[in-house]
Length: 266
Length: 283
Image (cartoon, helix red, strand yellow):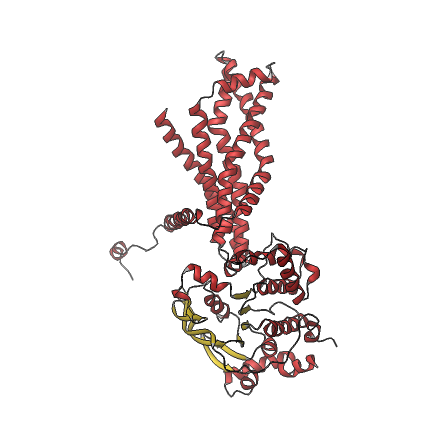
């Protein structure tokens, strides 16, 4: 029987299995990202597949992103009005909502929705292709599956998340406009002139730039989880699920970093 | 009775197997080893396939047959040993050379591995995009139609993979590999999961493909009847080694207890030796 001293001298190898697994997964994801960067500029370019994926990502998420943005804008306006009214600053409602939406709420809500919809979709699709040997078949036929599947989907996500964010912001502002008019009478022109004139370059530009990084994280993590899925139907479910969790977490971490960097310049 | 082979002959001629004259080897495997963690799957495999020859690798499920052909096309990296394709060591060629080498090889996956999001037509057109000399749209249509006709599925051109049965998926998978005019064909369990009649049809089809396209082939299977119909030579795998090799007739007469039990099991299961059944079905 081992004494207590012996066990202290020789700690179990897997003392923190969750931490160990997280670090190993992060390292492999980093290697996957390096492979992406090394491959993305090498021909052949799968332009048609990139357009197809852009269309699928944009088209499939537009309605969800638009409705969510509209509701968020409406609710934010209704919730904020009493507080602003207490300070006699009700006329600042359009500007406050616009700044909140453009700077933070629009990008983060769009990214989280896309992490769920696009990230899980890519994870499930690629893991299913892995399980049914479609990726192997592509490789054997002389087509690089990394270029055809991964590069196109990641680039499509990088392009489409900012576009979807613009749509989401627009719908949110329209929802806010309706929210303002529930208890008042503000014209469309007046609302948008009040909302948009208060927005500065530093409100719009950093928020827009970070959406490209959100898109990259969502596309890359979805592809990584699907491309490296374990065989078997269990692997498909696990890949889709872990893609959502990891992509959502990555979006919040990137947002935190973006805020810190932006605050340096403000 | 409509036999498998006679039905298939509507699409491809069913030749009698002819002995392969001495030809250079297109596949040479020497002392191949592959393990997954601590589990050694391939312990020491040495095989060769001559030009125009069809070798069936038989063995029980989980013995590492599929791992073997995935190592051949470098989908899996061997731990040890050498694989020579067309005289070149696959571990020493560049990525570009490997891609070019793979274009000379057709691989029929167990489930067909058709691309779910593409129609049958697009599935067949997909390998053509990686050819150095891309065919014109008319030539492409011609190649697709010919490949589908060769496997007897001309009517499936507009269908999606989800609309096809297991046997049809394998035929389309075969057509997709044939469109590249491969010099080597690798079949991973071509008859697994199919009913006996469709299995015989597929086995006959493999023989027809070999004759028409002059391919050298490896068939991974545990279906003795398929091996008897389509292969010139059989290698029996067990416990990570090739334990016996020869023609069907030689192995059937083998004194080796394990080899004998493998063939006896098939005879017990089907009620007659595979050779007798095959002859019956081709009559």
